[in-house]
Length: 216
Image 1: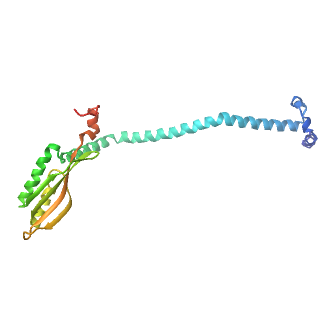
Image 2: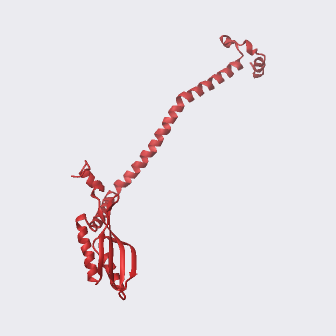
């Protein structure tokens, strides 16, 4: 049967009288169209209810694969450079230890103040006061501020500051005030100094050695 004849039969179909029970007697073109519609509907349902969730799972697994691949590449790089990284860590530990040795402990702060007093006397300065302030805890260290007030000549004061900066313990100097006094060329120096002590309770290694994290 030609396509033209089938098309004519399709146009002559009374759509209201169509019965699924008599689908076998429908025109061949109508049957074909119904099969196409049924195939599209089945395909859409399968895609929506079966393929779509699997596609989401596939996308998730592919993203996970990329993440794992990036982690593998990073760890492979670390493994290839492990000896170099260990050497760098050892150097950093040595530098850190050297810096920690420059920080006075609580018991060494009085001796540090004595060193500052000795430096002032060595440069022929008059010490008006060296007074500790309350310590200021920080995240990884404790800041110990103290006020210094001395009198003397300009060059002697400059030499004194150089001696304080050259002390083996870390001392930072702040808030300088230099005023003349009624004694010829005598000047009065007032400043805020700070030294620092390391907080052992902030050290991860110390915490690992003391899981309870409490004081004895």
